[in-house]
Length: 396
Ligand code: SR1
Ligand code: MG
Image 1 (cartoon, rainbow, N blue to C red):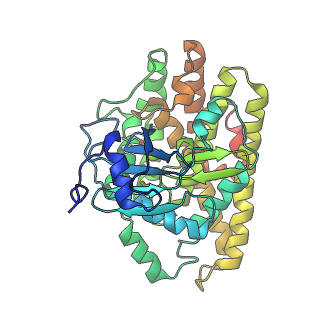
Image 2: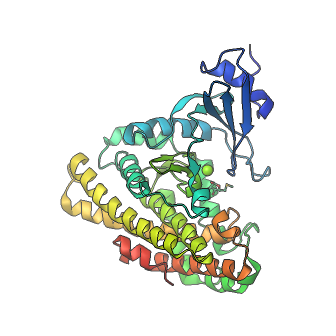
Image 3: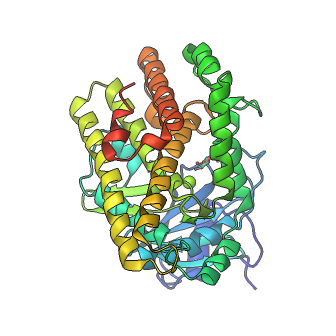
């Protein structure tokens, strides 16, 4: 019997005993230093180190969200995250953290310590640039998504994955926070910057043509079981250093549209651009634009190569179908970049890139650029075909 045989939410003081029981990395008499380092909206993350320099991360799912104890949510997400990271390590080796083990009772996993990397959002907020990022993230997005589609994977194996990663609770969060509330404040938890109140009412709450397009995009998110996607691929889900990229936190993973992942990356780079713009960092902004163009163009190049080398379904593997399929993914990318830009600007889960712009005029301007760029992407999504198309949308 162990006190870790029944679930409870661990505190810093529980972690040393926990890792000694669950991992063979540390001896029973090791003196361990434990720090809670999580700053996400959902989970508790602890960094554990011994005095010989060995370290690991413990990530535990609570039964309520970290940002709101009124929101209950299944701890099953920790299993999904651990399994997905193990699966993705096969498709995109070296681009995700290693999972040492996961514990279905405590809903916690032990994983590789990446504290020699920085969280990408914070690095971008300091205007750092990562030259390898476009190459790494496109390899990750192409390999992890295309490999799990009906184009490449045998249909029965794919359906088994659809079933295993159905993830209804986390999808519901996205359906509400991304595809409903930003357009009507239905649950009265939007956060609207005072200076943009009228602008948000006109551009988001009262635009019926926009609402119709969002309805179509929302239904596609809910029904297009295209690939096993990350589902929350923002710059707070990525660790970077100059020569390495690690994508983590896939607890929102499910079978959904590939463009949701690609669009989230583009939108989060636009937040970084907007911050750079507010701080007058022209060189940084130009490099962000270059990265956006590279990401879309490399995604297209790698997608075509992967498709040609791996497509297996007899009817789906033709060149004509590939072109059609890629066009729909780019259209979705524009749509979901748009919805991410909007929901992080007015919804309950905002981004520090924008909320920490202290000059109120500059922040209001950054928010308006997000919204206008987003609307351009959503309303004209069929015309987004190249990296240049995405980059140009920023200049509203
Ligand atoms: C209530 S959870 C808010 C947001 O945090 C996660 O990272 C997802 O982006 C979610 O929408
Ligand atoms: Mg997260």
